[in-house]
Amino acid sequence: MAIKPYLQLIRLPNVFTAAADSLAGWLLVRGSLDAPGRWLPLVGASMATYAAGIALNDVFDYEIDLKERPGRPLPSGRVSRRFAAWGGGFLLLLGPLLAALSGSASSFMIALTLAACVLAYNLGMKRTVLGPEVMGSCRALNLVLGMSQAAAFGGPGGWIVAMSLGVFVTGVTWISRSETESGRTQGLYLGLTLENLAFLGLLTAALQPRLFPAVGPDSRSVLPLEGLLVLLIVAWVVNLAGARALRNPIPASLQKAVKTGVLSLVWLNVGVVAAVRGPAMAATVAILWIPAYLLGRWIYST
View 1 (tube, rainbow, N blue to C red):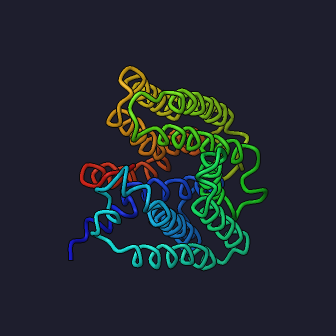
View 2: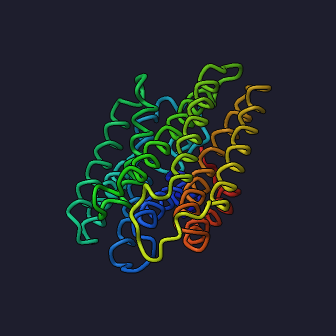
View 3: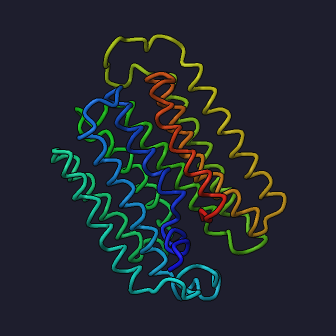
């Protein structure tokens, strides 16, 4: 049995970007990787829920993909719809169960809310004008899951980061709505605008590390140059891909803009963590980009 179609079904490279959200959330409020029994289940819950959402997305989009994306695992027949539906359902239940293993009722409730949000998106919200916003909300909740064991879920700093990531993913989703049709730029313009609003929010959080809980030696008065540099580089790369798509709005360039946005999520988390907790902690998040990038050369991300 070939395994690649099953890995394509869950967009395996992107699963590591979901892990980066919850890990970054944990580091933003805890500042260390102590107590792995508390944060590892949260990372696992993020990965399981993301994989579930993507698999179920293809189950519900089967008829559309038959026409627009016939090479995908389900319409091509390489993976059965029954397997994808049962597998997606199992992973969706697994997410909250893993979060419960962290020993936190708050984490369980956030994971349950995230799973409900993912299900609502796939059951019909994605076909409405609010679809991208619901997708962005899922991503914001994913980061909140990592912060769920802190007082007030990380305070104002944590909420700024969560909302900014949500806005960024909303923008990526608007761009992805145009990725199969040439010449459509309305979603691309809106998506790029939202992505840049998200950059402003993340830069605001990075410049105000005192908005986050104090943990360990307090070095938050130092200008976070490493984090700011990472965020600015990501903004440049994302806008460069967007500009190329605007100049030549064909499916290939639009899909490239979407893929760039998705893989940039790891680095957005890295930038904020570097600004708030320093480069050493940020490096643990950056490691997740390696499998995301390498697998992305073998398995599509959009």
